[in-house]
Image (cartoon, rainbow, N blue to C red; front, side, top):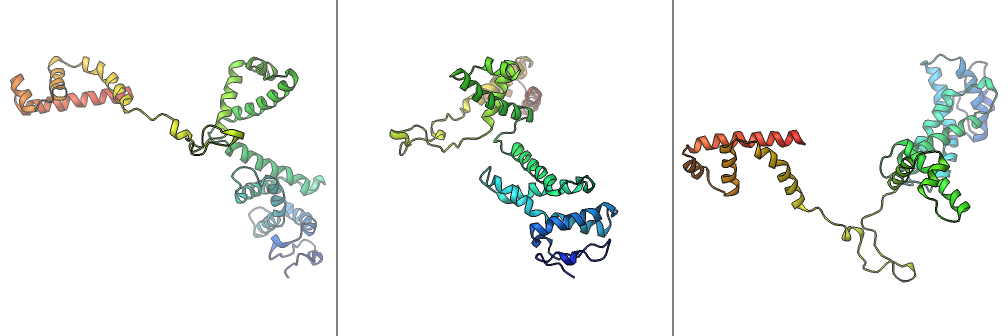
Length: 288
């Protein structure tokens, strides 16, 4: 017989039997708290993997999803604003809480579950809110630096130096600098963001964006790098092969013209050229 949310009384039917709840997500929070005690007591004695154990566990999850929505609501205006993702992460925390909860300790499940859900959501933001992936130790150091900087600024009446920050946190100056640089990866700026401010802090109309003032890649740099890497490989070639390369690509002579100069057939020039280019290509790949 399905249990209605407003009437939890019939749930306590026969001893050892769990009530059948067709829509556990519609059970009122107050009723869910009382029913959770019954389900946890029965879940403790049920063998894992049995249909009864799965039913009890799944029902506990559905009945307590309101806890997830309550905690997730605190993060509504944080991150990308996708509540579905936050609720999904919080549900993982709820499931972990259900699997770890010990009814014999006498504590309320809500008191145990809320910190689990909250911790899971906080870990989600800690791992995903950075624009650039940064090691966790640097993420934590960045948070410590922010607190230390605010505290020292109030005490000193000025911005603290790197040396003062390092001393306050008990780290080296190199580690403090690494944490400061890591903070640049927390948020990414838009290349389309206007640059420059006009009167009263308003952005210039028609002002240039960051993309407009950034330099572009100079294609000549790639050519320079290739020539720089190719120079020692050319120097190691035998005199005839090096001369063939110079005539073919420097003077733009045909293979027939090169053969006439060297006194060899065009076919021989083609074989030498192919073998030499392969050698140069392998040398460049090995250097990369």
